[in-house]
Length: 349
Ligand code: FER
Image 1 (cartoon, helix red, strand yellow):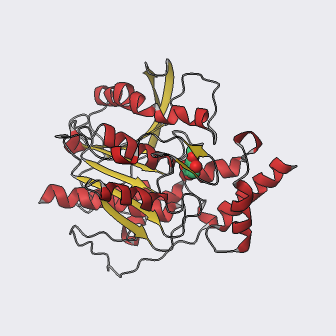
Image 2 (cartoon, helix red, strand yellow):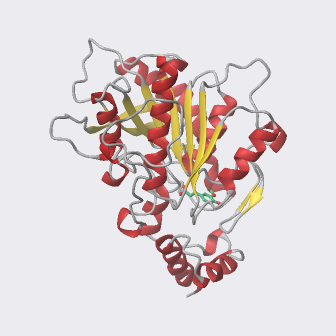
């Protein structure tokens, strides 16, 4: 009964977003006392976490400036992804996601990934690669299965407009478990496979992609982004392996990089606050964006707290907020657009 109540609370909380209602306040107070064993998460909750609250439940936030179809390439952050870039245009051929597997020495098993290749993908060319990490309870289908994130359109339109080079997007399964029966959840043990993903990514998946697809290698051509739990791991991986990724964006990053207790669980922390910086003499990313919606009903102010810690530690990054966005595709579209815009600007200057 109690777990059912909490399931309903979670559905309500995610569906309502941060509407400032009393219901949400009550839910948070109640959830503070729950343990992971008591938390039963419905399928609907799981996909909301994995790739953002469903489009039906969140209002699409309109652009704040009229671009008249013109994208001006400067290094300024724009909160909204322009609608000219999320539109499906009849003259543009978009890539399609396909699925593949690779053997992971890290996990001791075959693991899946989705990959978005440019429509005109050819072995005669080489392409930069974005590794894009999903949220908690997600898998390699979280982004490919949600047309509301407009990833295909943003990448395809920005390439068609000549803003960016055609780019490959790899969507891994970030739950790098050793035990095939292990399931993710809101407790320390169930989160360990996410923290293990750094090993799977760098030792298994990246070498596999580099061997099996026509990709440009090196940090200038290798990008990393993630949403929520994927944002948290993006921050962690970037701080640990900054030499691998030239361009990075952590969208609506989940708590747990440093120790804290939120409404879902207690986090022991992947590192101390004082360790949230690049190693002395490390090659740093050219662009390291941290962003979040101002109405994020799942991770709240945690992304801002990462920004504050990084700033206090003198770690270079860009921080911005997406006004009105919840834990949703408004934030995802914005983060990805700004990442590609910064890449384009940086490479042309
Ligand atoms: C948490 C809050 C949010 C947490 C994970 C999330 C593991 C992730 C949310 C998402 O991926 O959407 O305390 O702990």
